[in-house]
Image 1 (cartoon, one colour):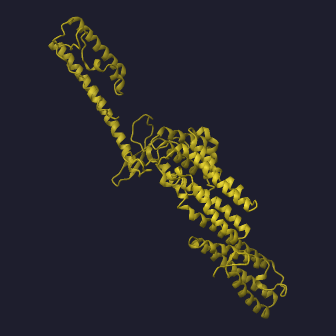
Image 2 (image 1 turned 120 degrees about the vertical axis):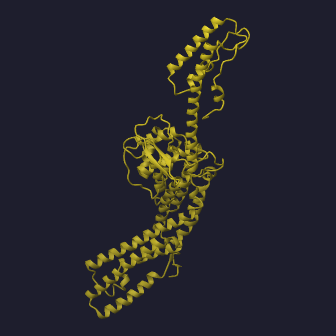
Image 3 (image 1 turned 30 degrees about the horizontal axis):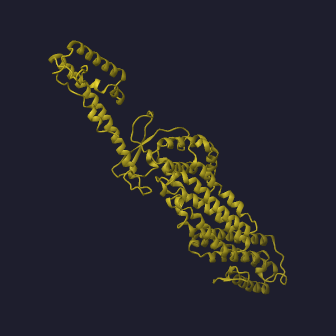
Length: 522
């Protein structure tokens, strides 16, 4: 049916008038040939046909609304209101005063079902108008939330307010006041849902905030812009509850701002519980962890584990349902794959480790009873997908960079341990060689300078206490005994030889110093 504007300027179609004409023709035939009891049966059959047509109408709206213009949706709302009026007064059946028929209980029941069906169609179409409006701002504006452009600009919510203003000016003429109020309130809900969905989108995984300190202030600014806009709209609507609805819905902006601004989860325990109540426990904890990873950086494992443990201790009540219509399942997949020890379990688990298979995927295993200081290549960087080989201006990359960096770190640790072990093995061998040369061939240590005492350049005396501090693999008491023994031998050699060190040959020196210069593992 073609669209047109009625006498009040509302967009309507010819659907109600066409239906009214067809039903009146049928009822004229029924009145001429049937008794009043049978006429009621005809009325019931007509209303049952209306119920079936309503089912088809709702199915069409659900499947095709994305391709419908807002004008068509407005006509569905207005036509449904007209049909409800026709059915409720029985005027759909013609002049009821001239052809008075006493409605039966069955007729009233079917009539009420039809009225309820048209009311549902009107409600669904009203929600779809709000979705259609927000669809126009989703890609160019809302999808930029929590990106670098959002952090730097500060004008995105002003763009949203300007777009909504253009639509609302038209809707004021196209819809009745009640339906217009419903569209405004639904826009508030959809706006908050799209904001949260964009803030914790999958594309943000592993990307650090451009300026983490400015993010809380940006959230507060967005809230103030939107609250001011909907307050003005509510004033134009003569106080129909839009401002109250916006103030309550935008409260999550303040909660999220406090959580991101906090350095310790204990400082915002009430906000964390409120956030998890809105999003559900699983969504809430996963979203908070992503925000903290983006704030502190993907490799700050100490902060990540502190927040993960804090969330486990603070959120004691399980909230199964999410009050917002958002899909954050990708956060659950990331958190379940992470090595955070307190993820959704009643007891603490142990860090998991990953190994790459032949098809370039990762398989995980669990290490039980492992000491916390044990060095293992873990997947703590699962929240981060940045690489140290990325460009400086990039926001992030895929998980391959994090795996490369984790692997490089493990190799560095292995090289460090190997180098330390080799150094101490060579030190021990050189001490034995120097003792052998001194005792068998009578060779002594070199003289460092004139007037100075002779000092044996053995491995232990050359490194001294540094050698003890640098290694984690020998027992400290044994090393102290070795140093003391060599020092005593040196003093004895000094006493025996006196000042005869001018032509002494040099003993073998420890390679530990030049090995240190290579800076293994730094």
